[in-house]
Amino acid sequence: MTTSRAAWTFVTPALLVIGAFFALPVLAAFALSLTDFDLYALADLKNLRFIGFGNYLDVLHAPLFWKSLLNTVYFVAVGVPLSMAASLGAALLLNSPLARFKGLFRTALFAPVVTTVVAVALIWRYLFHTKYGLINYALVHLGIEPIDWLGDPHFSMPAIIVFAVWKNFGYNMIILIAGLQGIPQELYEAARIDGANAWHQFRHITFPSLRPVLLLVAIITVAGYFQLFAEPYVMTRGDPLQSTYSVLYYMYEEGFTWWSLGRASAIAFLLFALMLIVTRALLWLMRRRGEAA
Amino acid sequence: MNPRVIRVAVNAALVVVSALVLFPLLWMLSVSFMQQGESSAFPPPLLPAHATFDNYRQLFERAGMGRYLANSLAIAGALTVLSLAFNLSAGYAFAKLQFAGRERLFQTLLGALLIPAQVAMIPLFVIMKWLHLVNSYGGVIVPGLAGVFGIYLVRQYAQTIPDELLEAARIDGAGEWRIFLRIVLPLLKPIVVTLAIFTFLASWNDFMWPLIVLSDQAWQTAPVALAGLSREHVQDNELMMAGSMVTILPVLALFLVLQRHYLQGLLLGSVKG
Image (cartoon, rainbow over all chains, first blue to last red; front, side, top):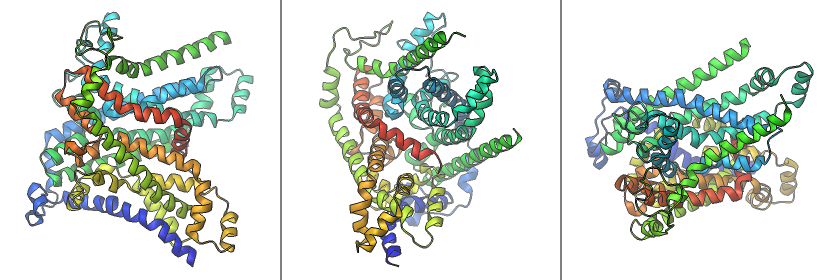
């Protein structure tokens, strides 16, 4: 009895905070998305009007929403596989029994993860500079014409993807190394006795054993990449020609530049719905393939 | 293939990849010591011709970076200490104390992890406005006082505490809070360090919410102020690199000192159990 009462005194403070500053706002966001909440309503709630699904219809009819959605999907669809490939490659290298100074290399490869996005985005903005950037300098040496990375709508998103891969691959690398270390060594020994080469070992032992970890990592990364915001905010302001305008950037502009808080809430919910659908689909797809294999 | 060749190839690949990954950070350090305009040249210089502290001086004297760093430190520091209190007590209770509806409540909390924070941001701004917490440290600290991820991390770790230990203390007549403070907290020390560094880093690096709730420059954190400065000083590359440097340095240093704890937490937090 007393334990149970004590238990509630332990959990209640945290539950109150999460309830008041997360659960309540999430519910309120849905309510807000059904109203024309704006600067006038912020001053006086009497100015608030219920407009049903008007915001959702408005947003779905706005070309900029579709543009931002397409950009975000591009970022996720290209950025996530590249990030995971980089993480897996680095994890395989670091997990190799032949590798030396593993701790040192691991620290070096993980360092970008702990840095501040805004600060490192500024570095990359300059590395991508058309005239003075080191990336174009390197390309010119390889005989490639300078590219206007952040000024050409064809190259702006690829540039942001390169930056995001650099910034984030170390995180999944750590999780994948732990996954690799969990694979029983006997499997490899047996394979070697059967004459399997390195590629066969990777295809038939490493990859299948790692599948659950890869799925987990894929879902975490997809969810994270859908929340693209700081990178375009700092590097391109959503330009050129709105080619790096993301859904969250759109939400931020609608909400805090134009103060259409109702419409911004609708955008947030549309993004949330899309994230749920995509991560669920990913889960379903991988499970089905896992059963088939 | 010759095993010696493979050994050399693996290590060479690690050296090259590490050098490429670290290069932007080292280059930032180098440019931050260059004279104004020096880095805008072709070919781009790798090292300053005459190293100078001018950019750092300007950053603190004219751009007010000291104030922004102090804001960041105050917010991240307060958030770390306070949220530890909330998350440790809740995480421990979810692991070790019996109460009705415990499992269902915990599953509900885990479900909340699926919802991106941005969904809550707009009403949260309205709530903060009503509470007069916009443009104050409280605007960032109060919503972050407790978090599902922190509670989950503590619960995972606290489950390893043997029940017999707690029962023995109860038989000796110790109260639940006394048991928590005297017996449980010392045992939770590793996860306290891990969660502290996680919270501090996340809070220091956070951008979108501080950008929304701290529009007044006087209260801005270093990343928010840096983003603002970069929009004003588009050409001032050396100054910006110095700004990036002082923003990254505290978290990078903290990570280097405590990386074992940080990486442990990362694994504990992502491997389902």
